[in-house]
Image 1 (tube, one colour):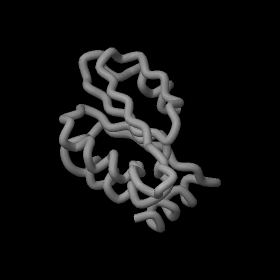
Image 2 (image 1 turned 60 degrees about the vertical axis):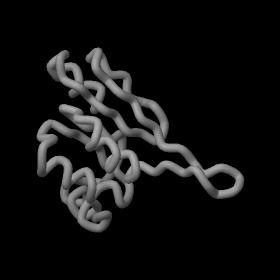
Image 3 (image 1 turned 90 degrees about the vertical axis):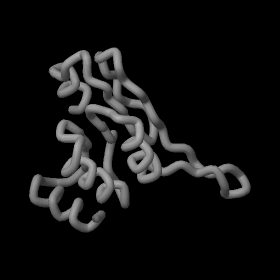
Image 4 (image 1 turned 180 degrees about the vertical axis):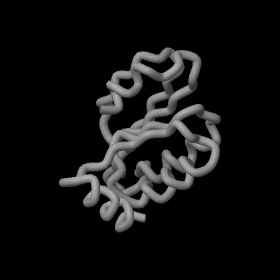
Amino acid sequence: MLNAISKVIDLGERIVTIEDSAELHLLPPHVVRLETRPPNLEGRGEVTQRDLVRNVLRMRPDRIMVGECRGQEAFDMLRAMNSDYDGSMTTIHANSARDALTRIENMV
């Protein structure tokens, strides 16, 4: 869905994507791709989606695209969408639109 929507984004906009595994293939030229990282064998070095959402705000994107909100990053994503990043997007898996709203509420 995000791939399809991205086709109507202005080519001059700076987009930052955040994903667990790279699945988005966006056409605009100004795309920065960020991926999460699991912890190493000692349990250190993990980079979560929430870490990336918080840090991407310093990168001055026009849009933030999160591949799928599944946890605490939902709060930071909603906060970003309600401030300076109007055209930001994310997906969420749910059985219906009503369930999606309930799921976001539970994550936040």
